[in-house]
Length: 391
Image 1 (cartoon, rainbow, N blue to C red):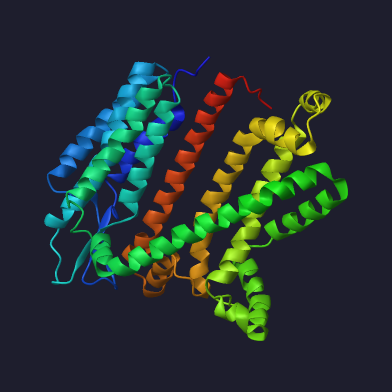
Image 2 (image 1 turned 90 degrees about the vertical axis):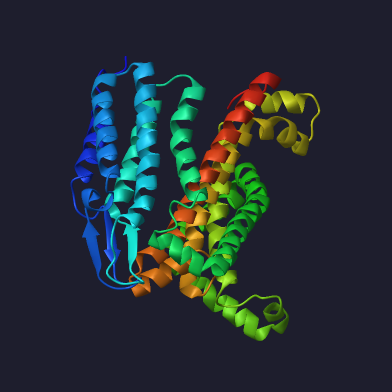
């Protein structure tokens, strides 16, 4: 039976309330780089502060009384979603409220506003745990995101420092974003092409399987930046001794070592998913298929693959999200992904340049994680309709 009082959600909502009375909700500065002056929500939100206080108090009351009732959790999730969207809107409008002492001064969201947004999202997630109907869970999450998108498209955020940085680096942002996407998908696609056969070989043949698993486990234990640096030396030697490789763009810095290192990590995830899924397939299905005269390839393609496909997609999901994050590290050796903004911002203590790289990276992670999770769900529904057995 579900517990009556959701203590975790109570703490989240109380923390949201506390944040509204602390400093560092937003900050202002005389220039993009330099000393930052922390501002409380009351100092920067103007009349919107009262509205946000009222909504947050209402959320706290609903969190306390909702318990495990579905309809009350739905209402509470809606209020949390409104808090999520409104705090972004109000922070954007704060640029019209806060006075900056210099013409090139900046106003920006600080740690308090970001934590408030995260807490509101977590309250949504917790409320959805008590909601059975899918459309209600969707509304709870989508409402806040819809407000956020509307705020962005209507230019309400243009006064914030991060949007000014985006305007400054718009061309570079498009290039880095494109590089980040192409590298991430290129790594994972190659990981699938090589990982699926390797996972099958590791399962079917004991000795090669031990070698494959040992090598991949060893590589996985190496920190990503260290592995990228290790890749630089042989690639640099190859490009220097074989000019044709250099003409193809293979070098000791830039995209090549990043691709090679992340490909090894992606291979680990996909091979492990493939190997683990094949191990738990019921052997009776395999024996029945062989009894019908199927070849080894037919057994795999017509019996094993349909059964293990959701597990493989789950492995691809983990691999893709990890790769999107891993590409960020490539900026340390000259690769032009979104990590370049993070590195540039850290070097100059410009938090909004850091966020210019961080926000789209996290957005990509959440987006593709959500899409691939839904793909697994749809595949399970399709499997049931076709009578495909589970593992």
